[in-house]
Length: 323
Picture 1 (spheres, rainbow, N blue to C red):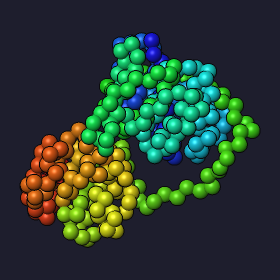
Picture 2: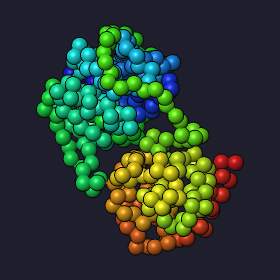
Picture 3: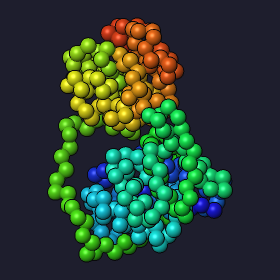
Picture 4: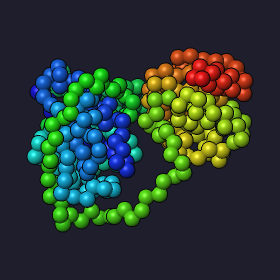
């Protein structure tokens, strides 16, 4: 009977959706194989017990005994190490976010256990089997950890949210007793970058633009369509390198890896580097005037046409539907 610990990441008191997605998947496993799902929270977050229970957690464990107000890799890893040593979960799930990709390997080293990053599948049959992409997303492998515990990074949106029918999770407190710990570094200041936007890695819908937009002044077409869809605005490496769009919008192997329900690629040819960052999207729609563009090989739906005609028409139609 596996016990699964799920790390709940928060930013300024707001819990990341990937935590609820991981809990939903973990609960589906324990309902079949037995065991419990433990939502693990460092610090405070309002309503966490209610939400954790609704998505399937049996318990919400609040770790205290340290300064968790601001993320510090050494402090967080030390606290989770002590928790895992005491409670001995069979699996620790961490969202494959910027924070999670930093935390997961550090925790695994402290626990001397297996670590699998950026995973997109998880099942249990007499042991855990974790699916993750390799070769820039062109293939997948199913890996089985050989250690008593394993730390697994889960790509946001890889799992769907559960029905949300449960009551509040039972609350517990775990004292990590980190007084006297030297974190090695201290965060002095956090600066937010501009107005709050939908985070690419957590977005359910993304509209991305590529070199086909012809110039930075035309990126507004992508942003307008994204706004109409309630989506995040992304970009290919080509227009980021050209200085048309900030790097924070880049999707791809050297940008952000995403897996939304809908990915709309406008004027993007479909280079391997870009496909590596978005090929796990549930539904891919491509708009390109070149019928032979590689993006159409991975697209579920393709529109062969001039994006300067197609994108404004889509924006208008979507706005009218929502009016």
